[in-house]
Length: 235
Image 1 (cartoon, helix red, strand yellow):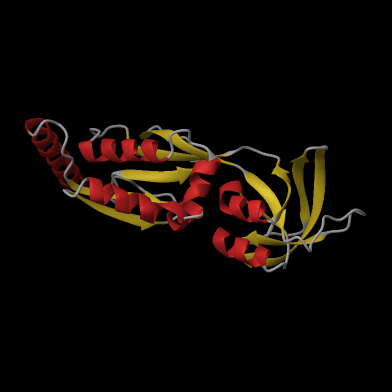
Image 2: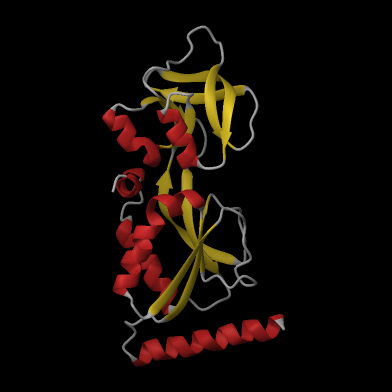
């Protein structure tokens, strides 16, 4: 059955490719199924999907939101967007956007000067520890005491705005708050940057639909910088 389904998908892709060639190669059509991570979906995907649908009305776009790993073939996804994915020889793709983590807090909460732990809001379970940050004066460590655990980074940001504690958040999500003075930047988190990848199966033909959406991402984020994503957050 699995072989039959995959053969059917391949035949469908061949038919759609032939149709696109016959029409001049400029008319993507058919179903485009995408999986995107939660935060990117909450901040940008709705606007991106709407813009794509208006531009390509013959494509039936379906987007699901999830952070888990997916089996693209078994779950019939054409494209997945993931943050810092593990290497996978069955997938190919490109980085279309980069972000970075920063530590922020409400103006009334200030970093500890005596080494005592500061209250923090985290995503998911976490215990006491230290956060390493880089500031204009050098690198330092912040002793933290998690007092609130939430499942969404948007929820974490909203809690930090209330003054309950500091948090590590993507700069794109809090850029406008920092500019407005509602949140204060304590430093950049020491560690790898956030890279958003658009991935598709390496053994599948690159359909006109997928190619069109990759171009759509490139047009939306031409430099692939955090401020471009922050513009979506602020809209």
